[in-house]
Amino acid sequence: LDLADVAQRTKRTPEQVIAGHLGSSFNVYVLGFMPGLAYIAGLEPSLYLPRRDQPRVRVPRSSVAIAMDQTTIYPFESPGGWQLIGRTDTIMFAADRARPSLLAPGDLVRFVQSSRA
Image 1: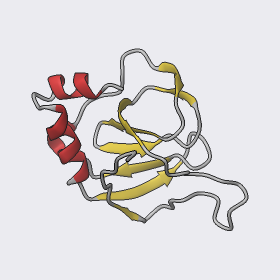
Image 2: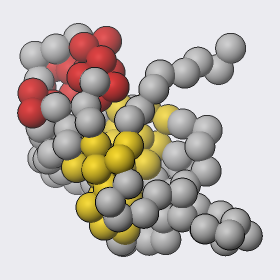
Image 3: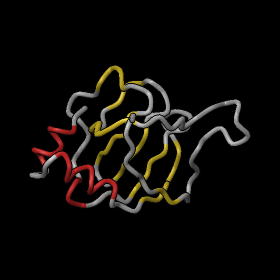
C-alpha cells in the first residue's frame, strides 16, 4: 500500500487520509481500461495526487486507489499506476452476474470502513 506515502505527501496522518476518502461523495463517470474498472470522481481535494511515476506491474485485485480527483477499485490483478490506499472484499466484476459490473456511469458511491474481524 501507498497509504503512508500518501499521508506524508498530503501532510496528513494515514487515519486522516482514510477519513478524507470515506468523507468524499463520489460519482462514477465511466468504466474503462478493463471490465468493471470504474473511474469515480469526487475525491476530497486535499488528497489530490498524480499517478505514480513508476506504475506497478501487478496491483492486487480489489485494491482501492486514488489519483488526481478520482478513486477506483481494481476489479482484477493488473498493472496500474494509482496510489493504493486500501483493499476491499467487494467483487467489482463477475461475468456470471446479471449485471457483471457492480458500478455503472452515473452511480453515486460512498465508501465505508470495514475490518476483517
